[in-house]
Length: 477
Image (cartoon, rainbow, N blue to C red):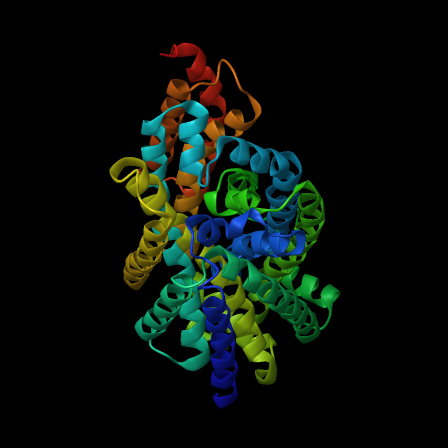
């Protein structure tokens, strides 16, 4: 226990040190939010991929989806790597960087205002980012708190407060430059962690063939191309987690800050390989939970004989990883989560400060004032997210699903069509109407009992179709 505490203390000290170094380098809003638009390829690759994956993957998704879908959960990893990463970088990276420079915008809500000449769309997008990123951030805090609870026997609430306080402190100091610098370190830790996890999972299970046979003995469908829940639920999970990155502000922002087109080409290859390795190992390991965990040998992962999905992966890690290496697993999930938290906090606070405050309340705000306000808004956002995480309203997968689904339903169609089509039928009135209709569909389905991945998928498909259709039906003013 003492060794773990020492390692985490050193880890926290390094993060704080980088934040302090970058404190003076982030005096303007552009420096704090985009690192001066001078981020190189490797740093960009790591900051994109580490923002994509977090405790939500390793604690929530890997456990629940692995338990339910078995090996077919690997389709999600493939979709994430080749659509959510490679597809986004290849088709949109250069275009996003170029258009945001031409339009002189820093945020996605500003892009919607400039592209569609609609301040109302900017206000809608700003409010949506802040509101729907709260549950996403809460889900990450929940995953981290479960992990610290398992490793240090800390009460859930204390672990939550400690993680929230540290995140608020870190993000109020260095901004994007500090985050991007640390993401390289975080990424290297994640790679070492997942390779270690894969090796010990296969070794403890008696080899890949033995693991597969044991899983098939539980249910043959767990090793089939489509797991027990069926093709439609699997498609919804693949689509939700792979298509949403085309319009998720915390991921799109990475292309605002990247240095040039050459950096995009290098970053595309590196981030795709990283995503394939991280996602593939996470979902494979999650599928083996059925082999290693039972109510008899791991009672902490079950309640009344039924699995506690958010507890499965912490229990699995404790079973397959030697105690001497357990601190590496802790750093793996912590590194993934810190990057995601930093990206979410940065984007959410900018929606308050840059988009709403400067956009509608004080257009003459100074750079120094905006940067100071950003630091305060970061702390405010973390406090709200921690409060929601303390309530634990649902499983991590359900919380993430509704957050990604809502943002994707609002932004996917207007953002993609807005990037690639300059004239009719895509215009502001139709795009905003499509965003509202798609969001209403997503939330309406969720409210009536539809699963969050299915509700989000249908909302995003509606967004893609409705943006040009409503542009034809609603004449531009």
